[in-house]
Amino acid sequence: MKRKLGTIGNMLMIRATSLACIAAVLCALLAARARQPASSPAEINREAELNVKAAYIYSICKFVTWPTDAFPAPDQPLVIGVMGKPEILSRLEKVAGSRQAQDRRLTIRTIDKPADFAGCHLIYLGESLDAKGRAAALKALNTKPTVIVAESEGMGKQGAHFNFFLGPKANVLFEVNVRAAKASGLEFSPQLTALSMARLIQ
Image (cartoon, rainbow, N blue to C red; front, side, top):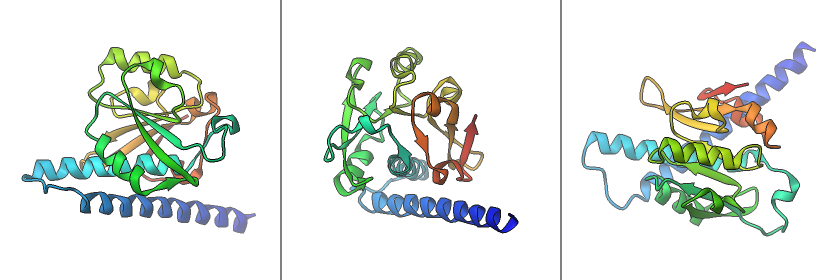
């Protein structure tokens, strides 16, 4: 039994490391494709932060299992809706232009109101979205099989499946709300929940 448990633990560690490698490679590609170099340390840090978040959103798309009826057609794209006009939009568009997730092409859609959520598999709520807008989005998506990614304090406990925040060293970390995922019919791979930068909300 000890050997089996040890093997499973090693597998989780290897998979988590693989996911981190995917994100690292994608961050490097996004940084290399930036048209204009940042002119100050603050801009460099912000650019790196946005690239890391875009890379992790891509990783989330790869390691979440949606209900079978979420993709009625075999060639249906995986749709990422972006609400709140965040700076990350251009990075996600670059990712979608060169990558696939789960053998599906990625489509980025800008969202103005909750009524536009239909057909989206993942919704990103930008930090510029006010509290009223965030609350309306969470209410509209409650228990629906749509991944909710946010970047505002408290959103993980309020129902977002993933919520980015900055650690003490200004590194990008994220909360994972496993309870909300189960209620929405979503399954998260251990490759996501085993990451050291993930803080679980059970």
